[in-house]
Length: 300
Image (cartoon, rainbow, N blue to C red; front, side):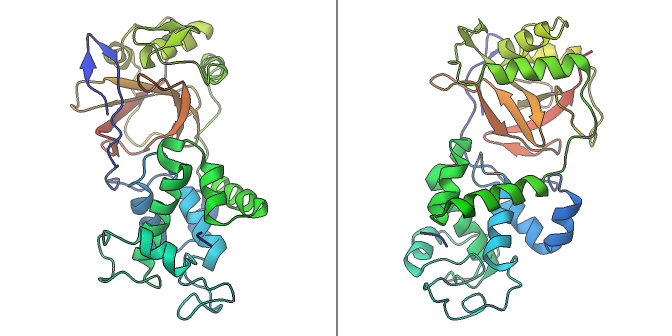
């Protein structure tokens, strides 16, 4: 129960942190997710989660599944009234918490907002999680714990979320696997504009160093790395080691990350941050912060 980047001298510098717009296509979902979650609820979770950069839709969907079977439960408090703890609606909000996170009214929501309205409830849950650690993926476990103060709940939601994410399409190339291992080993390294070593990285510097560890020489800046290819056709499933690119113009990449899991990359985001994992869209043209996802390459 609920208690984008300007381009400078060819190097990526700052990733925008504006709220994501709903994606133009559904992020990849596993067969288990498609079986467990009604299509309308799945689309709603994806749209609501996209308002919080760093919140995977799979986590929001897992919360909805645990709380009410995605609104299908007939237990007290789901469709009307409250349960024994005072929780209401499909996302099982306490009234005061729902009131805090229910505004502004989301697209298609009830006005005034209602905890029993699935749209209102999903968006309020996304805002709750975002405010408590999901923003930019700072601490998803803390965000889930704040939603329902129990370790078992956190573990169950994370396990479900993992099962709802489609896995990468195949085994990584040997170079891609080594590059991903290198990138993951740099987690926590400070961002440094122009940095290309473990003393500090910018986004393209991290990618260049990671692939050097895999035995492949890449150009220095994000746009040149995208141009080096080979570029993956739109709709191709991502594999560990693939490079994903972001920018404001179709022909201008100013940020790059390295795929390390389903809809997840390692990147060096911006000044004041450290190398970290971030959630990424999987449909070319989808919003990501103040930018859009331009596409992917598979070096080597």
